[in-house]
Amino acid sequence: MTTGPNPKDQPAIRVRRIHFDYPEGSLARHFVGGDLVMSHVIAYLSATFPEGEEFFVRSVRRYADSITDPVLAQQVRGFVGQEITHGREHRELNLRLGQMGYPTRREERTTRWILHVYERILPPLTCLAITAALEHFTAVFAETLLQDERAQELLGSTEVRSMLLWHAVEESEHRAVAFDVYRSVGGGERRRIATMCAILVLFGTSIVVNSTVSLLGDRATRNPVRLAKSVAAIRHTPFVSRTVRRRVRDYLKPGFHPDDVDNSALLAQWTAELFGADGSLTDHLH
Image (cartoon, rainbow, N blue to C red; front, side):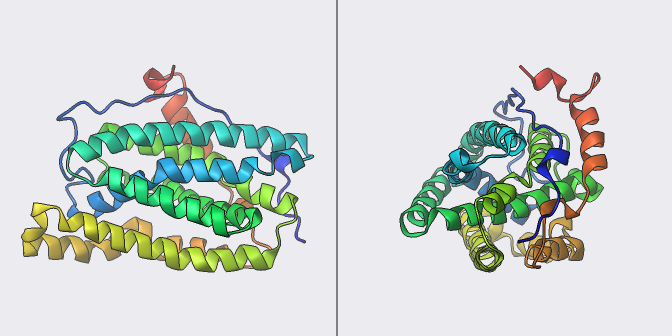
């Protein structure tokens, strides 16, 4: 079994007491840079987070008593606290998006049903492997948001931008925790890689199918020119760039570890920018 970076070398994971508000009228209908398709994609992903985060927490907590490394045990507590907060804040955003016409309630229910099916039919270790794989996805997308100004510009200056930047920082902070728990309890490379192969198909398909269903309920899609331009723009979004695709595929390499890519400077920059003495989100902290 590969060893990879030592959890003892990683900084403590801080649970921040934070809250975001979305007053009526504060968000445009197509809140991601006015882009039709990307607004529905981000709304769908937000709808999956509350149930997804709870699934992640359950998957990791099942093995909490088996963790003998006190540093990793502490990181697990930080991971759980952060994920619970993410779920709560995305539920608030989903409520607002639902009021704007996005089918977030239905998508939350569907996500809950699918994840409970996984838990009924799959071994707990495979559920943990699913968590590690999806945490890799979210970390890659999160770090793309933090690194690429084009991605940040899509979100404008709304409260959604603030919330997603905070979420991106914390996903980057705890990106290796589920992976390290999986490995520490005996999870092997074959299961890990096979699980990611399945997730690549299932997760990608779910985004396409559910975003399409969501778009079908939007009157703006009746404008064929706008819809065609929005679909064509997908290939230029930073979230599907060659770099992102390569980083996602890196997970399939034997011996991979999430900390193979150093994100310490990126985290230091954004932690100071968001939560430093003059941080843009210090007023959101409680």
